[in-house]
Amino acid sequence: MAGRIPPAFIDELLARIDIVDLIGQRIALRKAGKDFQARCPFHDERTPSFTVSPDKQFYHCFGCGAHGSAIGFLMEHDRLSFREAVEELAQRAGLPIPTEGEPPRAGPDPGPLYQVLEQAAQLYRQQLRVHPEAGRAVEYLKGRGLTGEIAARYGLGYAPSG
Ligand code: ZN
Image (cartoon, rainbow, N blue to C red; front, side):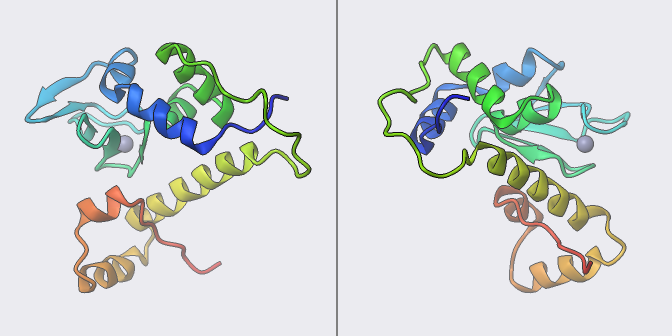
């Protein structure tokens, strides 16, 4: 396997990619105010609750809690690994992935860890919406002055006991 992808490259890549173009090539988006809307590709619905924000470069579904960046979308929608998603975006942006020239790493490749963390974050965000006891967590967040939008933006979730 190729070496580690520098985090700074991920940042640069996300800055070059327009998530609206990326998602718009896969599902039909409609302009709604400054965002774009669609019927969510991750759950079954009739009225659109899936939004894509050009400003924040995030997608978010108010129905099922699906949320993430261009990389997260490719991982969830196209079922790519973290590395495959980065490779796809790098190709799209015409950027070579800077892995050569790095000193050999002693430790294991952290790539799969990012993937697992993304999946875990996805689960906790979903639990905040669907878990029977999520109401307590939502009350707590409200008590701290956090809105649903802020919770979505920072990827806050709920880890139920067990
Ligand atoms: Zn959804």
